[in-house]
Length: 152
Image (cartoon, rainbow, N blue to C red; front, side, top):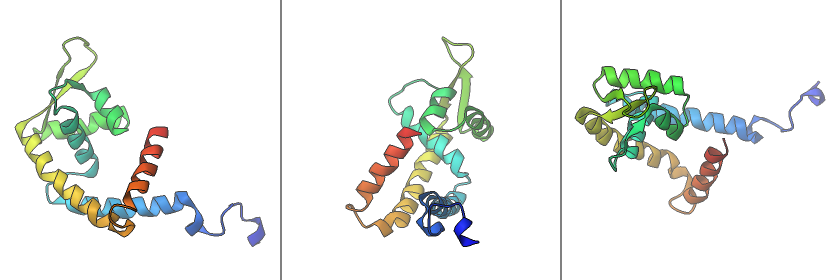
């Protein structure tokens, strides 16, 4: 019966997709625990930190632009922004040139929370990725992740 198993791999530990799923779940558990300290879910953090990054130069950012930058579904982004807006971390306002678009602004509380959360997430990342080794192992891994992110 084993010969009829339809996988090209000898076992799940050889499947890049299965390994990625395991690693991603482990990484997400760590991030979830770190972000509980500041009352954010990971998807809320991604949107808040992304908005912080995008607006650092004073640029006007729309929901669609944030969604594209974060590689999240537009409806998910809208739902997350609604939650952040309810917590008075983000303000959505009408776009001056496009009546269909919303402009996004961080409130001072949103900026403060991002400033508090980013180091927590980065410390959790550093601890998690330490297994790759300092410097040498992390650079090729980061390059591979960037290639995957850009291709999908």
